[in-house]
Image: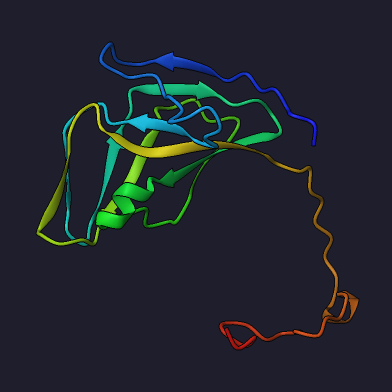
Length: 149
């Protein structure tokens, strides 16, 4: 498979912001660092600032994902995956929810809090049709566990 080269410009919004890094040479994601101490209350969400804005090229998106080490402890992203659109120029922030042990989770400034991956976005055209106009499949309208898994 041919490797795609992509350049993303990052603008520092705070002098204390840490530029995203990769944990290893073959890591898919770029670690995002907390700009400031943040408390994530149990069962509630908090926005963790990174101190960076970026310019993702047209035809691409940024995907903000939970770090597995924090997920194991009980920090999740309430939307599962955050999407950064190519035309967004605001500060990158991580939306986190604490479901682990204890009343809250303390995120320390400089801590790796999420990963950002870059993925292509296809040019999609939607066409309205009727149910008869959709291709038929073996599964059909079955959903929410209908395949037995």
